[in-house]
Length: 333
Image (tube, rainbow, N blue to C red):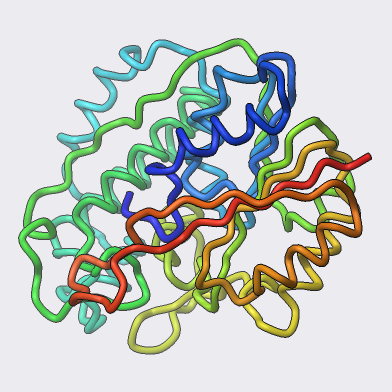
C-alpha cells in the first residue's frame, strides 16, 4: 500500500541503526512495533528477533498484522478457495452490501470510492469470508481478510488515501478487483498482535526494543483509511458527510497541544531498555522538545536519514520532494 508514513524504504537504516545502538545480535530480543500500521516494520523484524509485539488502534492494521505475524501455514492451501471467491456471483438482494450502498455511484450514494462492479465484488467476497470464518479458522480468516483489504486498495478510486474520492474513475480503479493473498514469512515465534491505544497497552507489556512510529502531524489515520476499517469490521454504521466518514479514533498524537504529553507518558511507562522513535522534520513535536523529554529517562542519541516524502497519486510537485527522518534513541537504565 502507498501508506502515510510507511518505513519500507527505511528498513535497512532502521536495522543497521538499531543493531549498532544495541551492540549485539537481535535474535534473542523482543521487538515491539507499537504503531504498526500495515506491518512493514514488524514483519521485517519477525525473523530477526525472538518475538514481535505489534499494536495499532486501527482495526484494519490489526487484521494486516495478524496475517503477517501470526500466520505460519502454507499459503498455497488457500489457492482453491481464493479461486472460488474470485468467481462468486453477486447476490440479487444488495441491500446488505455496505461498500456498494455507501461508496459506489450505482447505489445512489453520490460517492465513487470504487466502481460499481468492484464495490459489489468486495461485498460479495467479504460476506463469504465472514460465513467461512468458523470453517477455515482464525488464521486463515485473517489471511483472507488481509488479502481483500490490500486487493481492494489497489482498485480504490482515490489519491492514495480515503479522505476523498475522485470525480472520475482513474485507470487502476477501472480494472476488475482480483483477490490476491498477502505473502507472509512463516516462523514459530509466539508473536503478539493487539488492537489498543498504545499509551494504555504500554502499561501491560514489556520487552527489549520498543519502536515508535506514531502519527507526526494532524492527519488522522482513522479518517484517511476509514473504508479499510469498514471492510475489516463490516458492521452497521451511518456514514457522515460527502465522503461517508464513519466514527473514528482521534489520536492525541495528532494534536499540537497533546502530542508531547502523549510521548512523555509513553516513554515514562515503557518497560523496554531500548526505545527508538521515528519522527520526521515535519512533525508537530520539535526535535528539541523530543530531546528534552528523552534525556529525562535515559541515555539519548539521534540519527538522521533523507528519503522521499509521501505523495498522493495526484499530488503536484511539492516544494520539497525529500524529507528528513529522525530516529531518536533512548537507552533506559
